[in-house]
Amino acid sequence: ATIFPGDFSRALYPFL
Image 1 (cartoon, helix red, strand yellow):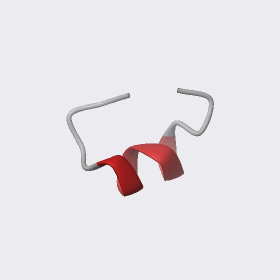
Image 2: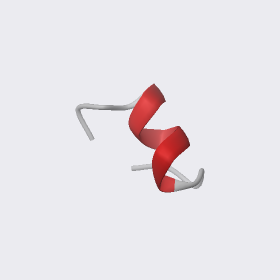
Image 3: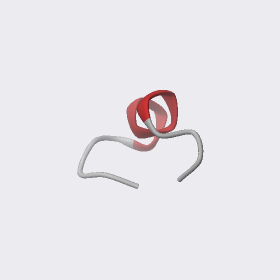
Image 4: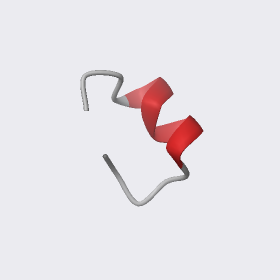
């Protein structure tokens, strides 16, 4: 979703 690691991006952008 973002440039962040999968786990972190999921936490910030669960819809992505």
